[in-house]
Image (cartoon, rainbow, N blue to C red; front, side, top):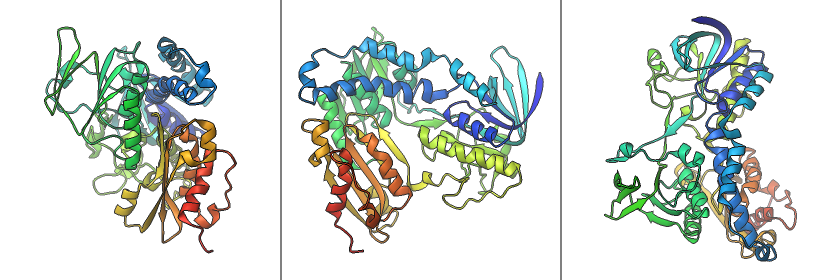
Length: 482
């Protein structure tokens, strides 16, 4: 057993952990990162990158088929095997040498193995070969261990060994048929990808699709999935799951219908990777989400930082916004806060400061890469009303914008702007349509910056682009007198 002292220990080398470590190292902290699997984590190998790669080829093919000239030129079908080969390239065949090289270049040490917090500022790491390394931290330990798919309590489900999100994004081929349980981002994206591959997809969702978005988003995605050939079983649930003699899945729905498919994907939510980390010794519940302040310090039941404030929980583990980009945003704040506190500097928790993740509360951007894409930021109309804002909702059909005519024949999509009537600023925006992901950052800037509508009138969109929808939204709202 060896013991090594650092300034900062980061448990988890996914995108979030890498960013915490990087910011701490840039702040002059001697930093080590602990990882039991691949450096780069879920996003690089089983989530963002492979899933978006699986979706991209089909989206491009359909986009070409929507435009006269390319429609006539594109006569072949999607080469599914080539899509999977491109996915393998994007994940570097699940080899993390390049990510390790980046850590080395950033001056961050790596210890491979399972890390457990065994004392204040102490992490014991057990490697695959059984060797043990004890790491001690002068200043902070950051838990960046992410989350895992939730398996609901359904008879026969666990025993049947269904796909989770990892299996869906790392599959070697497209199954002939696939049942998907869930109506959120993972479920709708994988339904889009596999339906595009020619798989017969059944999607089962108890409460419709994309329930956290504006209602029209789920409606347009459902319409598109049906056009791709998917069968949607909405307002339905799964009562039981069993394997057939052919090792297929027999899924019994709440209405008594039975679906028999080659594969079954469960995409019903996430649970935190906080079990078996030693958190119980500090008054925390293993396997539960971590409560944190805006600088990502873990809080105890009394609402105060645990044990003096050396423990941080960053990314999915704190359940603030289960998105890679939002976790990296938290990581930048946390890493900078750790370095500043270590140097004795004051770390303010005032909103929008250098060491806080204020945007987590009401300014989170998200893209669901279905076809059409769903891009949103800030509050939906329902959430804004629930929060007590006096709002006005403005909708506009994106297909009526000149730039959309250029993008696709018969472009279909909707934009919504939620306005705080008392302050004259945008609280939220949602775009549903082809290629709307690239519209989102303009909306994010407007929401985060609380840009008055009077000033937004002077942000002139280029012609002819889809961004002209901003002008149409403002015109529909009506020009303020000021």
